[in-house]
Length: 405
Ligand SMILES: CC(C)(COP(=O)(O)OP(=O)(O)OC[C@H]1O[C@@H](n2cnc3c(N)ncnc32)[C@H](O)[C@@H]1OP(=O)(O)O)[C@@H](O)C(=O)NCCC(=O)NCCS
Image (cartoon, rainbow, N blue to C red; front, side):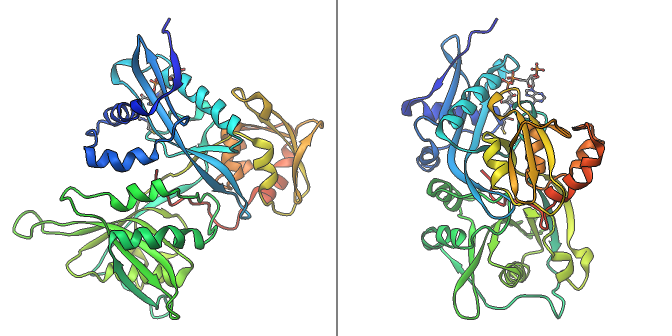
């Protein structure tokens, strides 16, 4: 049997933790300059290591954030990142030990949820994480994608340097408010690495800020150009859009039109965009918004189920009794009466039963209860409860995270 020694790492062990994580991702370890930025993300007490035979075998960490629920309530949540196990020590339960320790830590801190972006979909469901949001990758040819006459836009777009962006963007993002469920708070350490990252040429990302006709900043975009020397290859240049947030359709669209108008760029490829972003409706030729991929975005693991159920908004329908099953955090397990006015624990018999991972998908409106029942992921003791449950958990707008970590 493998002997595990799981404990929070000390500051002197943080870089080894990052090196192990990057090697587990088959990525190069960071330079000294890169580490100076990344180290800001490592907070004592939030970085975990599992040791086998005295050697670091695997690691995980989190940073403090918050998570928006349907209706706009924001709950404290831990953003889990830098998860990795040494390639020669996988499948011995290292991740399992780390996940248990981290869940206990987060519960002690009083955070309502843990959340992450998964490298593979098979990993985290067993620990109670479920898909809360989805995103899409869209690609547009700059020569063909043009705004319709009535498309939104306007205002002014200006490029800013990294230092100015570091001054403006954090407040701008916060000031936009909760635009959608699934959005998270970005701590200063996140901004530091996001804005000061360099591409393979050593250049910083390009950053643009949009201001409305009154001169008020109301949106921003961050992208990395991938240029091709026209004398070699196909000579095409792609703008890789990493981040675009704005107060509304006018600012969002204006940033898109700016990107599509950049000289010598052939294509804009945008990752992690909302599935229902109305690009198709803004273009003269809707097919020019080519969806390359749709994938799971934020995975959420409810840690304080009563709080998450209570703080979410619901639609109008007859209340239903929902049983939540949670093998890892048994305090969450039990029945909840969910109705238009909220949700509270109840002693009544369940009409529907769901595991905590799929509860995450219900909470964010990512899946309808009846869809999960069709997949045998909800047990419908009383099938008549599915229709009201669909109405209660329905959301008008797709959840979207829009922040990679
Ligand atoms: C994913 C990773 C962290 C798993 O670590 P691990 O220590 O091997 O996981 P465990 O041994 O605790 O596995 C627990 C269970 O999950 C399964 N599992 C773990 N990783 C899996 C994967 N990538 N695909 C399918 N199943 C996986 C195991 O088979 C095991 O199942 P079992 O309980 O039925 O036997 C590790 O493989 C890794 O570092 N991968 C590369 C880096 C990476 O992807 N990190 C995650 C970034 S989000």
